[in-house]
Length: 118
Length: 114
Image (cartoon, rainbow over all chains, first blue to last red; front, side, top):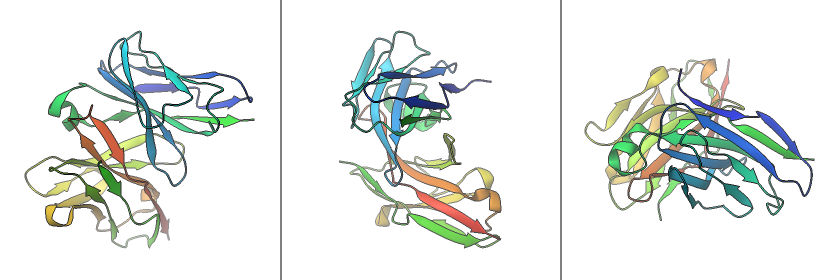
């Protein structure tokens, strides 16, 4: 079955370390998104990509970096510059990056990665 | 800027009772509206969506939502709640003109008591 795979499910990071969260999809979707979820704050957009080798900053991109070298992969790196990285991270995808047809499909979400700083 | 408001942070209902979760949005044009559900430690699952046409839309798991343009609302309802409905519910609006970004509300946590 097609879907989005996020790994690992749980991740622990020491202060000052960079960590990379994996997001892989086999849905042949063009657009991919990273959200951060904190209690009581809903989902906040970190980065998104609508096509390979291109990505855009979302509302809270500081301290994060991404790459989109392949259509099916959109890894997120949480750098040491992110001062409060402990959160639940969700990856999502959408079949078309542009226009109303893409909107009508909605998002497919992964099952998330919980990152904790120790 | 677009925004979505879910005024109820937490709701508790008895099993078998009816449920209504509120969602209000701020957007210049008719938006595309969605409701998602999230079980603990999981991703989000689409319940239903509205784009145009009939303002009452049916979704999965017996949920429905009604779009009211005059009130800028898209409330989620279920006639009889089951214990398995306990979860976090998110309303979202998407702007296709802005990179298809979804704007999510802060969520409503539903507790179901026997």
